[in-house]
Image (tube, rainbow, N blue to C red; front, side, top):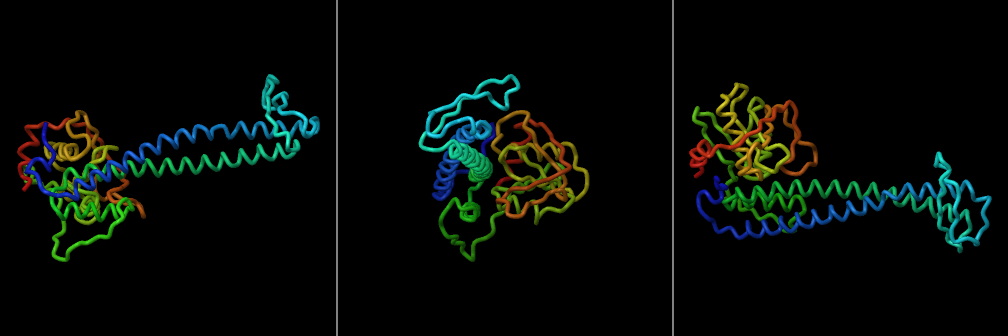
Length: 299
């Protein structure tokens, strides 16, 4: 199996990388545990309709009932086509009308709560997807300016509560640059900031963008400026997309590709997040004998 770039050319003393890896792992665990709890609460909130059903029944029969007498009542369910009975618990301290209102309020609270819980779950899943990209980026980042990119990213997204301290003399981090056997240049982002720069500032509209489908990984740019690349070079680019992703070492990995003119970044979206259209999906199993000589180009 081919090694990640960080192991390919030696070990670097980057304590911040270790620190950020632990931070991201902890945040991922926290978010994943929260999703489990939210799903349980969402399931509980499914009972909201039962409270509305009981409130409707109780309101229908309220004039046949006496206040402060029964702890529960059993009546024919107005929603049952076969006149099945429903039992409704009552608070004897309340009037029948007040019990009706209590059931409606409970229904409203659960319904609103469910909407909030669903939105919280959505946010958690987005955080998990984002943190997974950072986790993958940390494996490919081996230089101080690359780690600083990730630090700035974590601060900007609120996962790290520190201030960015970037030296004026520090050179901007650079993506991986590979040259295919036919001379075509292929660029690979090492972190989400680089991914955004590659996709929206460095690339030309006619270049080809590649990324593992629904799998955290690097943005890959095949510099062809509108020309049709050779099948071998397109396949090599897809191999690199898999290699620099969480699917490294897997087979039949789906890789989406499209022209860069079809890429968009939604306002307010996290670093590295994009939407795109007109894509084609390749299913590839990277061949070691093809990738190995290309990866040797890493300096």
